[in-house]
Image (tube, rainbow, N blue to C red; front, side, top):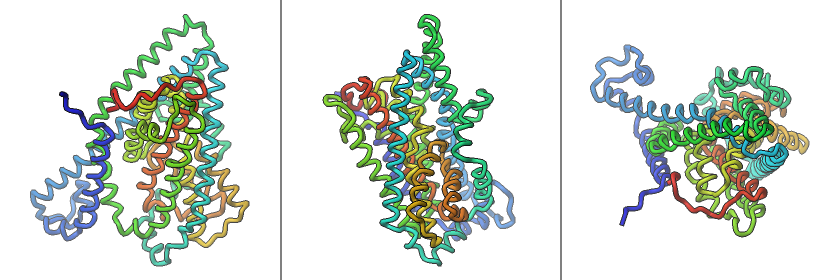
Length: 466
């Protein structure tokens, strides 16, 4: 009898748990004194490979530790860079093939309309949940003046905040809508402008669907073949995912530390609590209501199907980087047809940002409470609408929501300097809200596929996703 192999998502979870444990041990047990015992007086210069008078008589042990740190950084960086490298080709090939494969242009409009309607509705509901939860808990009222000053002194990064603020001044919902159409599609592909890549892919796919089938067949087969080739590369890379997840999580936990997390515990719990409501209540209810009897996507089927993508999203903080795995989960584990999965998931990496929308609502409310600004009912309605629309243009990459959060804060006259406080714990919360964004893509795929009669029976867990 063949020995059963451990499923991929369990391997990723083990790597994640080990990374958290090692990160906490390093954060609590490694100090400046530890470095000094090895002859390192300036650890930052030493790890960066820069000469320093404080680092005289550095022993071999410190050199070995620096090699381990560099190796850890290299593995995590290579994994994320590869996923980003493959992100644009996946969107381009998958979306062109999916749209062209739909055939009738009226079908493209119908499927696209359903997809946009679902994502905007869940985005709106997510923001409402965020506002309600943050008003009930009031996380900004749990932080003392002393703690606030300490967090600002530790996490302030005026250069990055200033840069983000400058970028935010140029962004408006109308600007985002205007820039969907690229002036140079090749530049959009090179720069990874995902909204523009999505527009380009949809336009080419629609044009192919309007050609006679015999003329379009060769091009459609080319894009389908390239998409399959890209997925093979992704499956090969995913074999290293558990190790890469460990390498990504260790420096995150070791760098943040428990003290900073404790200082912002109320804010973090509010965000995570709101995200949990979306993930464990809103999405399952929608899939139960809008999938048909016989092919019902219940609680167990939904989470079993999406588990690998959710865990990778948590570790990478990038819905775009996770897209290849999301597509694999939706098609092979949930049973959604290839054309619906390709269309909905690729569009969702840009349009569906429910976790980001909720986060922006909670962050704005938290900072308003922190600065003693009372948000009226009209202000909160404006917050709901702005966060819903702004989240549509959020890049699906780590930290992509910070720039657009400034737009939300300025619309409510909340000091943008408060971003320094948010940055103290943004990495972990970015990981959590990316899980929601990716899960929402799976939810939308199931609902749209069910409405189009392209949702198969539960395939269970098997195939390449193991």
